[in-house]
Length: 234
Length: 291
Image (cartoon, rainbow over all chains, first blue to last red; front, side, top):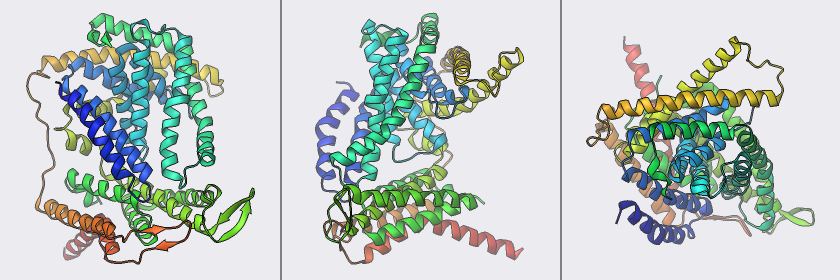
């Protein structure tokens, strides 16, 4: 059995139950620390799988380039609060497969926080973007969804509003609320919704206007140099 | 002057912040919270100088908002102050809100220090052996981001010189359209370059053998002493937690454990970087006055 598979089993059947057990006994921010620990544990198998397959130099550099573009994109479009990061992550996932999508998402979230400041939200952001990129890669692989601007835009909107945003809001719920009940949840998620929708709108705009041309550029590199071909298996 | 704690081994730095931030999440005893805020603020000030005041003061409104919001949702508590929308607004819940807001402030302060001390090179150095591919990936991203930002500005400049730049008065639509074109140009250039880099790495033997990593930091005698002191203090603090010294419940009634030796250990632990910093500043002062 592969190392990463063993790690997955250990995480699911040992680490997470143990964390939940001890987490329920913690005082104070028990929810936050338990949630963060579980998020970190869930990411271990992904990173181990990536390490375990000893990525080729080309693959490594392409992932690094996509991360750097995701972070640097905010310089290209000089509008405050216009975040292109998730659009770039999604496109990487669609072009280079789910695994690359996860790595680009998680690493760009982590690396961008070295420029803008790490915080208690870092692991949540890594998971949100990483899983978002992976989901995009999975849904558009093998022609499951057509790679058309409109489908990509709808997918991007739903991914931000239903997954990336709420996950980040959950970290602030655990951080800031003392008593988790329907009222307080509704207020926090409601307050987050406007930010999430504006970020989703950015993703939609980029997908509609430049989704296809950018994707063509990524595909062209793939065809030209014959890269990441074994990744379409999933 | 450089910070003395920042010059220690990254493992010592990392462990300290895991302890400091980890403890801040579980503690809600007012005395411990106070110690956490004061020590965090002092170290943050030492690291960042005068401009740190701005950050610290900006945490104050955050603290107040989080404090007054809590009783709106948490109606437990016995001493009623007044009613909002027919719900009790209790003093216990207000104090509980203050405790939770303090936790948040402590976390922000110590994360601020973490960002200053544990720089990206230290992180990749620390985890270079454990996750070699990912640290290499991170290292490349750190190099590429400034590079790409520079390239983006070059592309924008080049477009401007052929009359395709955007003016200050451009509409949002024009800005987005232009930004997309720039992003496309950057993507093409970067991806072509990435293949060249990748091939060049392979030609020089990447992946041919186990990669060794460059270690600029060595565990010195001071580092070992610090590590032992830190582990002892952290151990004592955790022991104090098991003896129930951290217990502080606010709702429905206030019940706070008396302050004991746990607080001393916790405060000493959090004062380690500050103490090092002051010790070094002092020594520097003495050695200068000798000349």
